[in-house]
Image (tube, rainbow over all chains, first blue to last red; front, side):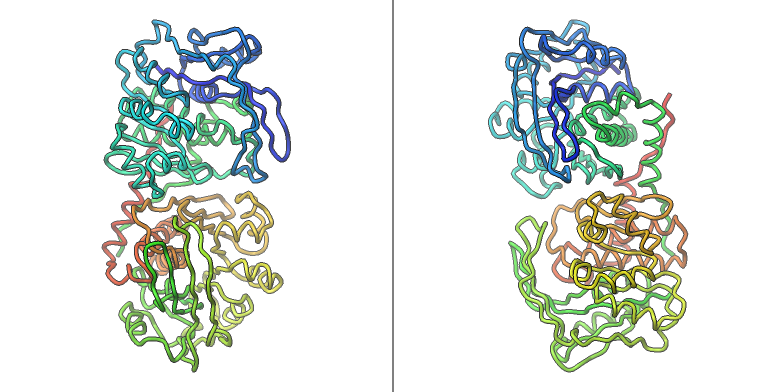
Length: 306
Length: 306
């Protein structure tokens, strides 16, 4: 199935206890599309970059088989985000945000993109997410992300978006905030009543939970000996998730479960280096090897108690 | 296999946002033995209670098929602990601890207990844990718990205990403290180098991880709509874990995985009510039903990528 993503392509400044990276490739749509590219090509990328955006990043996208017909190049600076992580990488502080060309971004889908079957609306203004939905004809699955900023500032617009998406992909604190409920099971149920048939709650190193009408599926985070940079883990998860569904050409429950695992696989790789750097050397064989490792990590056999 | 537990039997005061319970049944060995009793009987309980310990609790232990030959009754008050949970139940503050008869507890194993095949040393002074090990002949598996207090105050004694146990069952913060390492994979490796062949890291609502020489096994926490009282969840986990091994009569890797699931099952039930109250109505059928639910929660099928 064809896969479309709309969201930010950015330049990031990232500070951790051990190192600092300046103006490296970032943005939700970058992580999403490159992660997804290990499972499906082409990923159609709708985003905007400024005239300072390095050509090498465009080349990297192309090498990964990403379709750049929907990547607008505008005059002005590329969206810039700078953040600093705590020593244990469990929290971060935003030090700077410069919207640049992203401020006036109005996603325009090339005609060829309007038949997209799978659509991921990364974290942007919910009204822009709606504008994208108005441009796609009959998607089979629409997933979206959002953040505390929109939950607080644009609740009405966000409600309208939620009413039109099938899957909300969100982190645990945002799920709690959106639902006004600390317990994740009850929070998920409250969100499901707003439109989506499924909610994926990302919990960082506690893994991810998929809540849907018929039950729950849980995936642990892959236990990693070395986490370098958590930036983009959630978007890489979404990329692995949607990328697998695109490849499978199926939304059957067993494929959605496998998609959750592939999401966790891509998220786990993304944090092993700064920016998208781990993806530069990653292979499809690596991706499948870690899928198998997830099986070893989680699977057990039933046995009736005597 | 025969199962022995040494630890505290206590009276607890528990405060949550919604309710307060006074002098209810508590203590690590209580949660452990009752949880284990859903999988194996008799559980041999070595502990001490005071002359104020209600007869109804003894009757409850007996109903659960717990062997009380090793339960000492001493003059004085039973160990008392009082704590208050935060509104979201994610943290707690100890308000009062009165050791009572526990202060001079020196575990004495009845002769019939000395051939125990499975031994759980709940969280007590590491020197007492060692005294117990000196009294058992040839256990097939020894597991122990500990806490920040012993890690800080009695590191040398704790090291001697760790050198003689096979499995350390510990929460994530304690694992980090014991290893002096935030990353759990590296922390677990550091602990494994001190003696145990396995470390089980309990992470509350993030589930549990089993680290051993050959790999890692991860279990999510069961998603619960209503958590009433987290007290004793970790000890209930240990009871389900060791109880299943006792029932299976096996320490094979596939049984250790199932034991991790049964640990999670019993932990998930224990938090559904105050004290050990959920265990009063729980049945073996409930336990197996939730084991099956864990399968639905976590299992997926492999499929080779085309």
